Length: 432
Image (cartoon, rainbow, N blue to C red):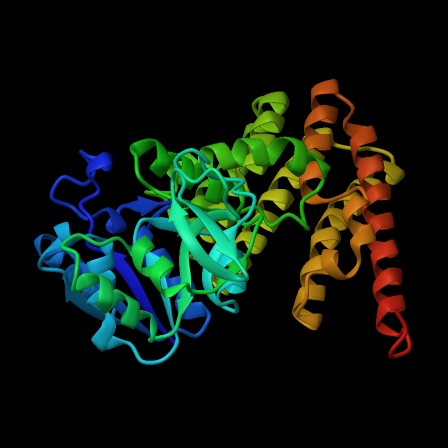
């Protein structure tokens, strides 16, 4: 399949952002809107992209294509953009063959939407419209599985037009009939004339970007949808993510995921050094570094920059921070009885092993341990929970109790994990 992207509009409602600059090249969550289309469609196997552009913006699109040589991009000018987006669509006729995808250059879609939509036919219709303003959105009325009417003012409608189509080349026949008789023609008119199929796909994030407020909200929504979810502990779900996603939305346009990793690591190491100045301030900074630790993953997923190296780097540097902080806390505690020393060392060892067994499971089995063994999601002892617990205990001055409890909880969690993984691994084939 090929991808056709309509990008010839002027984006007047987005000025001053779009003054002499194309809307599809504006950034949302650190990436150009157009790049998001191309990257996500390419992930689903689409190789060739036909982008219909305004001649006034050609130099910007050429720079974009030059910067993204890994994609096969064909720029097609619409010399008469005032004829409407229907005419822009018609200009793709000679560049497609067979089945193709059509999208709007000012729409945003989450990856899961495109993964499901690419398998359907015709116009993708959202019955729920969870992330859009229903009054502003284009509605679609379908009968017998076909689109018969599209418009913002429809009172009787099936759902909302997502701006995402899976079409056959024969749709251009309907376009030719209308273009021969009308000067200005909309894409909606062509699709209604062709009575293209409609497919229902609801509950996923998508929206069109028309105003500066839309730009901001699209970034916030993509960041909000970015957390990994299954691996988050109780503190992360209810506290840390609220902070990290707010910060990520502010910095994702100028901070890369790896830079975020390094910054939170430096904050954690600084927290460890502060133990010898003020343990309470150190504990607070340690918790702050934990709250911000999710930024790298959030920025990576929202900006389509995930990489094996980034995940590996984050995991390794987290271990550095945890070791420096717990070792520093152990040194200023200066336990005297042998049992206290033993439990202190077991607490440090157990903290490492909780993360290690989860990472090694992914390395050995190629899957997330929390997806395969959901029970572990609710078992206490994850990193976010440990860091928050450490902060509370340091504030209360209960260092001895901190190490004893940490040693018991972490090593018990590791033991339970080993038992559950062993049971799962040696379960007879075919047994649920």
